Length: 273
Image 1 (cartoon, helix red, strand yellow):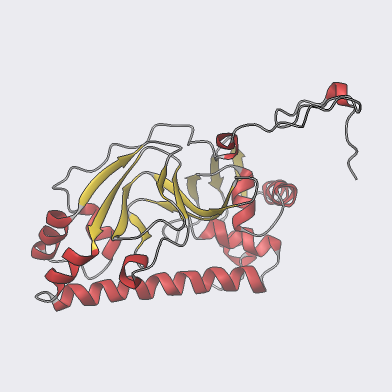
Image 2 (spheres, rainbow, N blue to C red):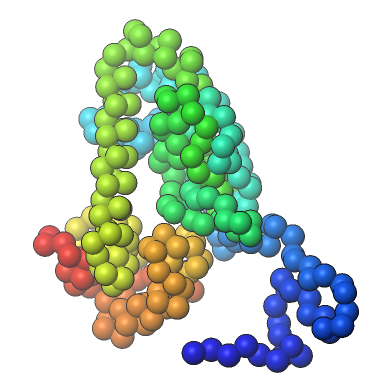
């Protein structure tokens, strides 16, 4: 149990404590204080407009044909977004599919106090919103840039015109949506059926590429934001990190994590292989 400190020792910037007989109301810091901090390093240089790599990664295998990539690059509108700014907001009309070409972002929703409750982190190249425009509905979540990012927006009406003559490309968009549904299903199952250690272990495994015994990664979010994604308190996440580190599973230095025993981490996540 933690006890509140006396007013004279309070270091919070959110509340101004006044004597009881003073009618001055409690004041709050500006809303921007609640925004997640940008990443503590410079983002990698964005891809050149003619570079097909982001599109090839976003659509997976089999690789897109050169003609399909050319059409997507032709109709895509590239837009840079600085760290700390919103790419799009919850409820904003969605008239285009949004691909994160480079950089890091989070998806979430605003709480009553103005803070962003993060639900998912995204590292480019990856889709930020590949479904709202198809449905003709507003964006369901807010996308916030953690680093300087570059996004590509595909106007849905223009895309539909091209897909009438490119049915195979249309099937690739269907496959993208199917992968997104599968990913969200796995994430939901992880939250509903796994305990806190398994949820955290699985979250880390999903960010470790390949099938080796060791990997290195840099956390994109603050501890509080990761805890929100895993439906736990920051204190619980801190205890889990200390436990994992004491077992030699990984070591942490700032935002950098080195996983020393990836098979053990997979076992803790409930994965057989």
